[in-house]
Image: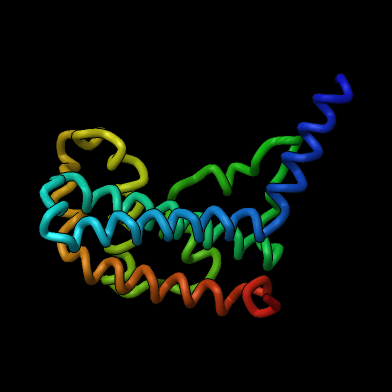
Length: 167
């Protein structure tokens, strides 16, 4: 391997193992969701029919990175295996990440939220869902409730994290 290749692998490992890298991505995704929410809440700009799914997609990105950052912070997951991102960190399964972090079952509202955010991560970037039976309308209703619960889970994750306790 060349020195440049080794440097790239080293950098990849250092960034992946640093919880603050994951938390930074989470915070940026949450910020974008909030900007989109402001646009959604403004009657002049609310006309975009897909805006709600983008809000959920960015909340989903935030949730995923908060979970993964906290799991790395608590040393529950080893981020790099054989110079590649660990398979556990390649998944968008928010329900599994929640259970891995909190070692508990979820209530029905939390489970529905995590499934809706996971749906948004996988589908909101397209004009229709990946599969016909998964139309987004069922995942994007009660947007305000989903946003409120997302923010509560973000705070729960931060309380669980040594990174946020120490900063």
